[in-house]
Length: 331
Image 1 (tube, rainbow, N blue to C red):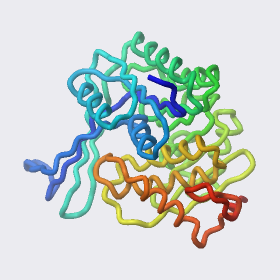
Image 2 (cartoon, one colour):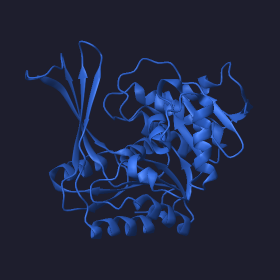
Image 3 (spheres, rainbow, N blue to C red):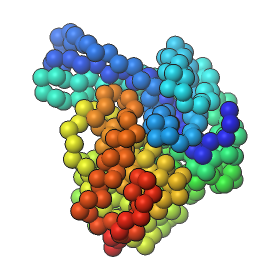
Image 4 (cartoon, rainbow, N blue to C red):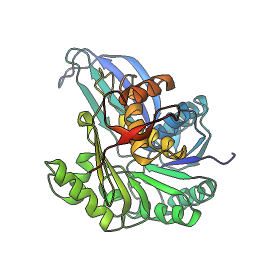
């Protein structure tokens, strides 16, 4: 496999299963239809979405059992270059049920297989080789059972040694045990709340919490995804609040991963960080309109991105073609 501008790492991938059902209720059998299978897990999704945006990417991920083989086959079908790491346990499944009567979406996420110490070391060794030719490494997703809580710190250390910038999107223990070496941390608001142990009800509180992580040396910058409220970019000296783009949603699954994909693509194109975050929001918007965790059409992303600049404070940024427009306001 040749070198890639971007490498993703997924320690706990999933076979994403998406179905439709008329009603979801206890006790009764729920008859499902429109079954869809996608290769999933944070970094796997990011890799597929980066590939859809036309940027070289390689996916490093674990795979075990029949579900792991299915994930490998799906990634091969998507033509994303990959380095699957065989493990003894079975890759997990993740089930999303769309309730047609109400429009609600139910998501059932399994914990994943326990990884042995030897399998964890193999993941780090493969990443070390892959990161040597990467400008950015995206480590995304939960840690499966048995993995050391400081695993992502080891990933950060490897990226530092190999000269790659790390973008980290995780939660729980994987987030709590990071102490240094992250270029960009991308928690959701819920994940940031859990990390600092406070409700973070206002933007000021959210900015303060993100800056605490920066001041501690955990990350150079933090992007907090706020769902329908957009996103918040916080650096040591400034913050930027971004509105979401209002569109009808088919599925919210994978939208956060799409946001990360758009951001890292923008960064790989040497765009300013505020512009890359806008591109991430445009990518997430396009993802909202596709079923399951399927990829989007690149032209839709560029259309949302260019449209984002109409009537907003955008001095000093560029559009999807790299044309300069007006600057983003900071405060």
